[in-house]
Amino acid sequence: MKNKKTYPIAVPNISGNERKYLNDCIDSEFVSSVGPFVDQFEDKLQKCSFFKYASAVSSGTSALSLAQHVLGVKYNDLVIIPDYTFIATANSVKQNQADTWLIDIEQDNLNIDMQLVIDEISRYCKFFKGKWIHKISKQELKCVIPVMALGNFISSSDIDNFNEKIGLPLIIDAAGALGTSNDKHKLGELDILAATISFNGNKTFTCGGGGAILTNHKRFHDKVKHLSTTARSGYEYIHDEPAFNYRMTNVQAAIGCAQLDRFDEFLNKKRYIYEFYKKNINTNKVYFLDEGKSSHWLSYFIAKDLSKERIKELYEYSNSQGILLRPFWVPMHKQPSYKASIKSSLENSKALFQKVVTLPSSTSLEDTDLKKIVTIINSFFNQHCG
Image 1 (cartoon, helix red, strand yellow):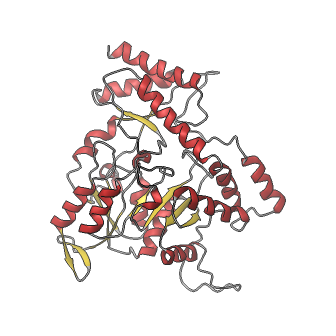
Image 2 (cartoon, one colour; image 1 turned 90 degrees about the vertical axis):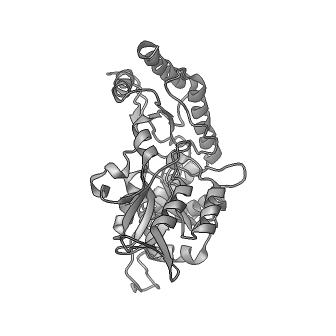
Image 3 (cartoon, one colour; image 1 turned 60 degrees about the vertical axis):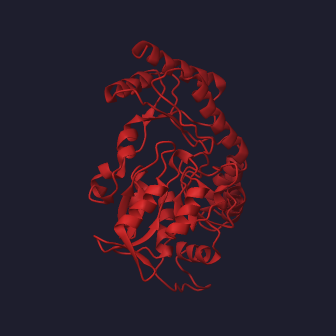
């Protein structure tokens, strides 16, 4: 494919003030974990997410792990996560020496089935002395970590229903969901303990790396801040408890500030790209979820009527033409480290995961690029599925 333009799934758009802000870091010599851009970045995050508090940290995984640690997740506890998620969700549980309980997803948004969560807890746990205890494993169920798959919003009514019937803390893994909302609620208006964000290079907004913990609970936020910065208790090097060095650097935050300067622009472009694909990919072999409540971090379709072999042919054909379509997450029940987890039936996760096809979603894509991508995808379906 020499000299042929290729279209990866997601590349960062760093065509704004990134260079200027990075030069400011160099000129000021604030390049490490202390500097004005960290404070500015956290302030911007609060405003655009509608949370009261934001803590910038070193990665999305460290954000998940630290949020659980501050909550009190510990050895031999149990944490519910969706089966269909990125491995970091499960790994963050293990980093706190707890175990995962895998729950199936909904077909219409690929998010954890919150009603199933309620049903499974009610069936397999007993409420004893203010704690939910798993009847078979005898482990304490400490929290639930819903994941906003591909940026898809989780229903506020589902969350309210869960809070009323179960009442366990919710930490939402919103890695790629910054900017998601529905008609009534923003991310920061959900009744949850916290949400975590990733700023990896493939996300809508990147710092090159990094993450954040967002919350409306001041005591929780203060503890996160303290433990993410080595629990230093004063000017001298006194650290009042075991802690972590999970700080984001000023250099990363400078890039993040430049990215958030274009918050609405990037979100609107992501939605535009999704709608373009939905309108112009012409085949009855795939479908797009009617997901208007999404950040559209990545565009994708569900290859409902394509065999595993045909989907493989689609990848091979598109890649040969420079259109780098990709499969998405492999569920946790298929990961060697999590096969033995407690789990629900996982019917939807098993049926859908190989059918999710992600599409080039970079905010730098122009209409000419999108037309070329769509033309090549449609040509495959015309040739093989006509």
